[in-house]
Length: 433
Image 1 (spheres, rainbow, N blue to C red):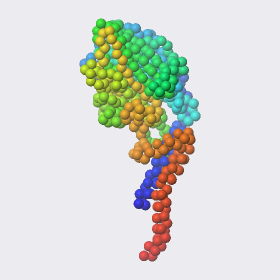
Image 2 (cartoon, helix red, strand yellow):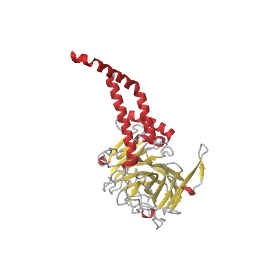
Image 3 (cartoon, rainbow, N blue to C red):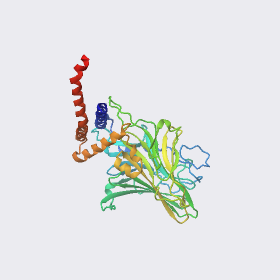
Image 4 (cartoon, rainbow, N blue to C red):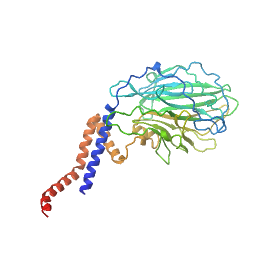
């Protein structure tokens, strides 16, 4: 009993110390770095396509293959201007490349890159230092995205959008929230109009990326939606590498399905242990210290022509230039002539807030890694959240949590101390024996 009490006390002290180190590292561990580039200096150089190819294609591809061969389409109505589209909300400042409609940079306005730096943490970026982007589009027989033909160049009404200018929309509970939509249009010579829309909601990190196919041609349209995260092997910018308090954290890909809620894949294993599975509900992500980016297919809004439920294909791979890619591909979308159809997905790119991740997809909240002491750490974290909801300060919350742990373990500690006192009394007698 005494041994168990000692181990329990030591374990609780270790976990509490671990949480203290995490809190210290979050506030002081990152050294201040040079200020971020201004919006005008955001890199607009084109990201290599790395798009899905049809299975009948003969060219090499570093991305998942479509289920149908791809036809040749041209950018008939593509505008000449390729200036990045700036979008600012209460949580994000991001940039979208009209060539393909990829998100090439995200700054998190509620999170500084280091203590008191007054510079937002950069989640996604595409420059000489790092490549980490969120790509999406339409591939397949009639899809405009192609490794051979390039990416479509979307037309936009303007190059700057802000949530402050958006109108308020009431949700189901009656609360008014501002919703910002950023539409982009691409038209084919055959008369097919593709409207790609990004939707941002006030106070929420998930971004809805929707593709609407309006088929005004004389032929049926077929394609597939894809969404993928593409990242190089650069270090985790959210991890401190200074001092003795440096902690080992996971950096790599992750995915979940209804049968296997959480799986991890290190970047070093992307070329060998490839993900290749299908799921009726799932997600793919790239995980780093404190933050995560994830694609969640909109698998409840689309059924295949045969009436079967939406089954997304989840894949990972490494490109020829050693880029790590993880993503999903939708089933084949059939749009008869004279009709239209929509398909969408959600992109989350932000902090590992368990309450938000849990509601997005099953298992996504498990990207918050508690380590091998996760049963104890999770309970302590719940207690920490409770105290923070009362005092509003993480430092005082940790102190209150420590006091609570001491009080809970006091009966065991007291009994251990009494036993030790009795042992000291009889120790002389035992020595004489």
